[in-house]
Length: 313
Ligand code: 13P
Ligand code: SF4
Image (tube, rainbow, N blue to C red):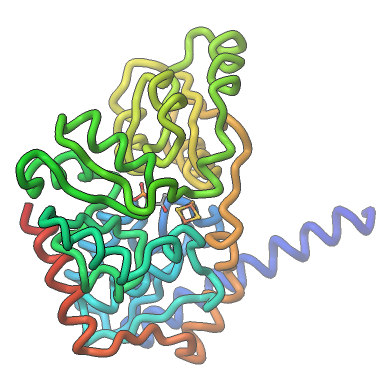
Protein backbone atom coordinates (compact mmCIF):
# COMPACT_ATOMS: atom_id res chain seq x y z
CA UNK A 1 0.00 0.00 0.00
CA UNK A 2 1.42 3.41 -0.93
CA UNK A 3 2.16 5.86 1.89
CA UNK A 4 -0.35 8.28 0.34
CA UNK A 5 -3.20 5.74 0.52
CA UNK A 6 -2.31 4.61 4.04
CA UNK A 7 -2.14 8.32 5.07
CA UNK A 8 -5.64 8.87 3.70
CA UNK A 9 -6.95 5.78 5.49
CA UNK A 10 -5.42 7.03 8.75
CA UNK A 11 -7.06 10.44 8.26
CA UNK A 12 -10.42 8.78 7.61
CA UNK A 13 -10.02 6.64 10.73
CA UNK A 14 -9.11 9.70 12.80
CA UNK A 15 -12.18 11.57 11.55
CA UNK A 16 -14.49 8.64 12.37
CA UNK A 17 -12.99 8.38 15.86
CA UNK A 18 -13.48 12.11 16.44
CA UNK A 19 -17.11 11.85 15.33
CA UNK A 20 -17.72 9.01 17.81
CA UNK A 21 -16.07 10.95 20.63
CA UNK A 22 -18.16 14.03 19.85
CA UNK A 23 -21.36 11.97 19.86
CA UNK A 24 -20.42 10.50 23.26
CA UNK A 25 -19.68 13.94 24.72
CA UNK A 26 -22.96 15.36 23.40
CA UNK A 27 -24.84 12.64 25.24
CA UNK A 28 -22.85 12.96 28.49
CA UNK A 29 -23.12 16.74 28.64
CA UNK A 30 -26.61 17.18 27.18
CA UNK A 31 -25.14 19.31 24.41
CA UNK A 32 -26.49 20.20 21.01
CA UNK A 33 -24.48 21.12 17.90
CA UNK A 34 -25.84 23.77 15.56
CA UNK A 35 -24.04 24.17 12.23
CA UNK A 36 -24.37 26.79 9.54
CA UNK A 37 -24.79 25.67 5.92
CA UNK A 38 -21.23 26.86 5.17
CA UNK A 39 -19.54 24.42 7.56
CA UNK A 40 -17.51 21.54 6.13
CA UNK A 41 -19.37 18.27 5.56
CA UNK A 42 -17.41 16.71 8.45
CA UNK A 43 -18.64 19.37 10.86
CA UNK A 44 -22.16 19.18 9.39
CA UNK A 45 -22.14 15.41 10.00
CA UNK A 46 -22.05 15.85 13.80
CA UNK A 47 -24.69 18.60 13.84
CA UNK A 48 -28.12 18.12 15.39
CA UNK A 49 -29.41 21.00 13.34
CA UNK A 50 -28.15 22.65 10.14
CA UNK A 51 -29.50 25.81 8.59
CA UNK A 52 -29.26 29.46 7.66
CA UNK A 53 -28.80 32.31 10.16
CA UNK A 54 -32.51 32.68 10.85
CA UNK A 55 -33.16 28.97 11.37
CA UNK A 56 -30.13 28.64 13.64
CA UNK A 57 -31.16 31.64 15.76
CA UNK A 58 -34.65 30.14 16.18
CA UNK A 59 -33.19 26.70 16.99
CA UNK A 60 -30.85 28.28 19.58
CA UNK A 61 -33.77 30.06 21.24
CA UNK A 62 -35.73 26.80 21.56
CA UNK A 63 -33.18 24.21 22.61
CA UNK A 64 -33.38 22.63 26.04
CA UNK A 65 -29.82 21.33 25.93
CA UNK A 66 -27.41 22.65 28.57
CA UNK A 67 -24.66 23.42 26.08
CA UNK A 68 -24.87 24.79 22.53
CA UNK A 69 -21.81 24.25 20.34
CA UNK A 70 -22.30 26.81 17.62
CA UNK A 71 -20.45 25.97 14.41
CA UNK A 72 -20.59 29.26 12.58
CA UNK A 73 -19.05 32.70 12.99
CA UNK A 74 -18.96 35.09 15.97
CA UNK A 75 -22.19 37.00 15.38
CA UNK A 76 -24.17 33.76 15.04
CA UNK A 77 -22.82 32.30 18.28
CA UNK A 78 -23.38 35.64 19.99
CA UNK A 79 -27.00 35.68 18.78
CA UNK A 80 -27.45 32.19 20.28
CA UNK A 81 -26.08 33.44 23.62
CA UNK A 82 -28.34 36.50 23.51
CA UNK A 83 -31.57 34.59 22.77
CA UNK A 84 -30.83 31.81 25.27
CA UNK A 85 -28.91 33.44 28.15
CA UNK A 86 -29.25 30.45 30.49
CA UNK A 87 -27.29 28.15 28.19
CA UNK A 88 -23.56 27.77 27.80
CA UNK A 89 -22.70 28.66 24.18
CA UNK A 90 -19.34 27.48 22.82
CA UNK A 91 -17.72 28.35 19.51
CA UNK A 92 -15.14 25.81 18.21
CA UNK A 93 -12.74 28.56 17.08
CA UNK A 94 -12.67 31.99 18.72
CA UNK A 95 -11.06 33.50 15.61
CA UNK A 96 -14.07 32.61 13.43
CA UNK A 97 -15.19 36.21 13.01
CA UNK A 98 -17.25 37.52 10.10
CA UNK A 99 -15.24 40.42 8.61
CA UNK A 100 -18.42 42.08 7.34
CA UNK A 101 -19.90 42.36 10.85
CA UNK A 102 -17.20 44.84 11.86
CA UNK A 103 -18.15 47.22 9.01
CA UNK A 104 -21.06 48.63 11.01
CA UNK A 105 -20.56 50.33 14.39
CA UNK A 106 -23.08 51.38 17.07
CA UNK A 107 -22.23 55.05 16.32
CA UNK A 108 -23.16 54.62 12.65
CA UNK A 109 -26.55 53.21 13.68
CA UNK A 110 -27.20 56.07 16.13
CA UNK A 111 -26.22 58.69 13.52
CA UNK A 112 -28.56 57.23 10.89
CA UNK A 113 -31.45 57.03 13.36
CA UNK A 114 -31.14 60.77 14.05
CA UNK A 115 -32.99 61.26 10.76
CA UNK A 116 -36.08 59.66 12.33
CA UNK A 117 -36.20 56.52 10.18
CA UNK A 118 -35.79 53.05 11.73
CA UNK A 119 -32.63 50.96 11.53
CA UNK A 120 -32.75 47.32 10.45
CA UNK A 121 -29.59 45.53 11.61
CA UNK A 122 -28.56 42.58 9.47
CA UNK A 123 -28.02 39.68 11.86
CA UNK A 124 -24.39 39.75 10.63
CA UNK A 125 -23.59 42.37 13.29
CA UNK A 126 -22.29 42.21 16.84
CA UNK A 127 -24.59 42.57 19.87
CA UNK A 128 -23.45 46.18 20.45
CA UNK A 129 -24.89 47.11 17.03
CA UNK A 130 -28.08 45.09 17.44
CA UNK A 131 -28.61 46.89 20.76
CA UNK A 132 -28.94 50.22 18.88
CA UNK A 133 -31.20 48.90 16.12
CA UNK A 134 -35.00 48.79 15.99
CA UNK A 135 -35.15 45.31 14.54
CA UNK A 136 -32.87 42.65 13.05
CA UNK A 137 -33.19 40.86 9.74
CA UNK A 138 -31.50 37.99 7.97
CA UNK A 139 -31.09 37.28 4.27
CA UNK A 140 -34.29 35.18 4.55
CA UNK A 141 -36.59 37.99 5.68
CA UNK A 142 -34.96 41.36 4.83
CA UNK A 143 -37.64 42.53 2.32
CA UNK A 144 -40.49 41.61 4.70
CA UNK A 145 -38.85 43.39 7.66
CA UNK A 146 -38.03 46.49 5.59
CA UNK A 147 -41.61 46.75 4.37
CA UNK A 148 -43.07 46.34 7.84
CA UNK A 149 -40.79 48.76 9.68
CA UNK A 150 -40.10 51.55 7.16
CA UNK A 151 -41.57 54.90 8.14
CA UNK A 152 -42.67 57.24 5.35
CA UNK A 153 -41.37 54.60 2.91
CA UNK A 154 -37.81 54.53 4.25
CA UNK A 155 -35.53 52.58 6.59
CA UNK A 156 -31.80 51.95 6.98
CA UNK A 157 -30.14 48.55 6.71
CA UNK A 158 -26.52 47.56 7.29
CA UNK A 159 -23.82 46.52 6.92
CA UNK A 160 -24.44 44.69 3.61
CA UNK A 161 -25.29 47.14 0.82
CA UNK A 162 -26.26 44.36 -1.62
CA UNK A 163 -28.78 42.95 0.86
CA UNK A 164 -30.17 46.49 1.33
CA UNK A 165 -30.59 46.80 -2.47
CA UNK A 166 -32.28 43.39 -2.60
CA UNK A 167 -34.66 44.32 0.24
CA UNK A 168 -35.46 47.60 -1.51
CA UNK A 169 -36.12 45.96 -4.89
CA UNK A 170 -38.39 43.24 -3.49
CA UNK A 171 -40.26 45.34 -0.89
CA UNK A 172 -40.58 48.55 -2.91
CA UNK A 173 -39.50 50.73 0.03
CA UNK A 174 -36.39 52.90 0.16
CA UNK A 175 -33.79 50.84 2.04
CA UNK A 176 -30.73 53.02 2.53
CA UNK A 177 -27.49 51.08 3.12
CA UNK A 178 -25.28 52.00 6.08
CA UNK A 179 -22.37 52.11 5.42
CA UNK A 180 -22.93 52.91 1.75
CA UNK A 181 -20.64 50.10 0.49
CA UNK A 182 -20.64 47.39 3.18
CA UNK A 183 -19.89 44.00 1.64
CA UNK A 184 -19.03 40.33 2.13
CA UNK A 185 -15.67 39.47 0.54
CA UNK A 186 -16.88 35.94 -0.31
CA UNK A 187 -19.95 37.06 -2.28
CA UNK A 188 -18.03 39.92 -3.92
CA UNK A 189 -16.08 37.24 -5.82
CA UNK A 190 -19.04 36.45 -8.07
CA UNK A 191 -19.10 38.41 -11.33
CA UNK A 192 -21.70 38.90 -14.07
CA UNK A 193 -19.26 37.11 -16.40
CA UNK A 194 -19.45 34.02 -14.16
CA UNK A 195 -23.22 33.86 -14.71
CA UNK A 196 -22.83 34.43 -18.46
CA UNK A 197 -20.25 31.64 -18.66
CA UNK A 198 -22.47 29.31 -16.61
CA UNK A 199 -25.43 30.02 -18.93
CA UNK A 200 -23.31 28.92 -21.92
CA UNK A 201 -21.79 25.86 -20.22
CA UNK A 202 -24.99 24.68 -18.53
CA UNK A 203 -27.90 26.11 -20.55
CA UNK A 204 -30.40 23.83 -18.79
CA UNK A 205 -29.31 24.82 -15.26
CA UNK A 206 -31.05 27.16 -12.86
CA UNK A 207 -28.80 29.85 -11.39
CA UNK A 208 -29.33 30.60 -7.68
CA UNK A 209 -27.43 33.30 -5.79
CA UNK A 210 -27.32 34.81 -2.31
CA UNK A 211 -28.54 38.42 -1.81
CA UNK A 212 -25.04 39.38 -0.61
CA UNK A 213 -23.92 39.06 -4.27
CA UNK A 214 -23.61 42.26 -6.30
CA UNK A 215 -26.92 43.59 -7.65
CA UNK A 216 -25.87 42.94 -11.28
CA UNK A 217 -25.27 39.28 -10.39
CA UNK A 218 -28.61 39.04 -8.55
CA UNK A 219 -30.42 40.45 -11.60
CA UNK A 220 -28.93 37.77 -13.86
CA UNK A 221 -29.96 34.89 -11.56
CA UNK A 222 -33.15 32.81 -11.62
CA UNK A 223 -33.47 32.71 -7.85
CA UNK A 224 -32.12 34.94 -5.06
CA UNK A 225 -32.42 33.81 -1.44
CA UNK A 226 -30.84 32.84 1.86
CA UNK A 227 -28.79 29.64 2.02
CA UNK A 228 -31.74 27.56 3.27
CA UNK A 229 -34.15 29.21 0.85
CA UNK A 230 -31.83 28.10 -1.98
CA UNK A 231 -31.75 24.59 -0.49
CA UNK A 232 -35.56 24.38 -0.36
CA UNK A 233 -36.00 25.96 -3.78
CA UNK A 234 -33.65 23.38 -5.32
CA UNK A 235 -35.32 20.46 -3.54
CA UNK A 236 -38.75 21.56 -4.81
CA UNK A 237 -37.80 22.68 -8.34
CA UNK A 238 -38.25 20.48 -11.42
CA UNK A 239 -34.71 21.32 -12.56
CA UNK A 240 -31.99 18.75 -12.04
CA UNK A 241 -28.96 21.00 -12.46
CA UNK A 242 -28.16 24.16 -10.49
CA UNK A 243 -25.35 26.68 -10.55
CA UNK A 244 -24.95 28.19 -7.09
CA UNK A 245 -23.51 31.60 -6.18
CA UNK A 246 -22.62 31.33 -2.51
CA UNK A 247 -20.04 29.74 -0.21
CA UNK A 248 -19.12 26.18 -1.24
CA UNK A 249 -20.30 24.60 2.03
CA UNK A 250 -23.91 24.90 0.88
CA UNK A 251 -23.05 23.47 -2.55
CA UNK A 252 -21.43 20.47 -0.83
CA UNK A 253 -24.41 20.02 1.49
CA UNK A 254 -26.91 20.06 -1.39
CA UNK A 255 -24.84 17.62 -3.47
CA UNK A 256 -24.66 15.28 -0.45
CA UNK A 257 -28.33 15.48 0.53
CA UNK A 258 -30.56 16.27 -2.45
CA UNK A 259 -30.82 13.08 -4.44
CA UNK A 260 -30.96 13.09 -8.23
CA UNK A 261 -29.81 16.73 -8.54
CA UNK A 262 -26.41 18.23 -9.25
CA UNK A 263 -25.02 21.49 -7.86
CA UNK A 264 -22.11 23.33 -9.44
CA UNK A 265 -20.45 26.33 -7.77
CA UNK A 266 -20.72 29.56 -9.78
CA UNK A 267 -17.13 30.05 -8.58
CA UNK A 268 -15.31 28.24 -5.78
CA UNK A 269 -15.85 30.81 -3.02
CA UNK A 270 -14.65 29.90 0.47
CA UNK A 271 -15.37 31.79 3.69
CA UNK A 272 -12.05 31.33 5.49
CA UNK A 273 -13.55 32.29 8.84
CA UNK A 274 -16.37 29.73 8.63
CA UNK A 275 -13.85 27.02 7.83
CA UNK A 276 -11.82 27.71 10.99
CA UNK A 277 -14.30 25.45 12.80
CA UNK A 278 -12.82 21.98 12.28
CA UNK A 279 -14.01 18.66 13.68
CA UNK A 280 -10.99 18.60 16.01
CA UNK A 281 -11.90 22.04 17.35
CA UNK A 282 -15.53 21.03 17.83
CA UNK A 283 -14.30 18.08 19.90
CA UNK A 284 -11.90 20.16 22.01
CA UNK A 285 -14.40 22.95 22.64
CA UNK A 286 -16.98 20.45 23.86
CA UNK A 287 -14.53 18.34 25.87
CA UNK A 288 -12.96 21.29 27.66
CA UNK A 289 -16.08 23.51 27.54
CA UNK A 290 -13.86 26.27 26.24
CA UNK A 291 -14.44 29.34 24.04
CA UNK A 292 -17.57 30.30 25.96
CA UNK A 293 -19.43 33.11 24.19
CA UNK A 294 -20.41 35.77 26.72
CA UNK A 295 -22.54 38.86 26.20
CA UNK A 296 -22.90 41.20 29.14
CA UNK A 297 -26.57 41.04 30.28
CA UNK A 298 -27.49 44.76 29.98
CA UNK A 299 -26.20 44.71 26.38
CA UNK A 300 -27.79 41.32 25.68
CA UNK A 301 -31.15 42.62 26.89
CA UNK A 302 -31.14 45.45 24.35
CA UNK A 303 -29.87 43.24 21.51
CA UNK A 304 -32.49 40.60 22.41
CA UNK A 305 -35.27 43.13 21.84
CA UNK A 306 -34.23 43.71 18.22
CA UNK A 307 -33.96 39.95 17.59
CA UNK A 308 -37.30 39.21 19.24
CA UNK A 309 -39.03 41.92 17.22
CA UNK A 310 -37.75 40.06 14.13
CA UNK A 311 -38.94 36.68 15.49
CA UNK A 312 -42.39 38.21 15.96
CA UNK A 313 -42.78 39.17 12.28
P1 13P B 1 -27.67 32.89 5.48
O1 13P B 1 -28.43 33.51 6.61
O2 13P B 1 -28.36 33.03 4.17
O3 13P B 1 -27.34 31.48 5.80
O4 13P B 1 -26.32 33.70 5.29
C1 13P B 1 -25.38 33.90 6.28
C2 13P B 1 -24.15 34.47 5.76
O5 13P B 1 -23.21 34.71 6.49
C3 13P B 1 -24.06 34.73 4.33
O6 13P B 1 -22.78 35.06 3.99
FE1 SF4 C 1 -19.37 36.88 6.83
FE2 SF4 C 1 -19.36 36.61 4.18
FE3 SF4 C 1 -18.35 34.69 5.72
FE4 SF4 C 1 -21.01 35.13 5.61
S1 SF4 C 1 -19.69 34.41 3.96
S2 SF4 C 1 -19.78 34.78 7.45
S3 SF4 C 1 -21.04 37.38 5.45
S4 SF4 C 1 -17.57 36.78 5.50
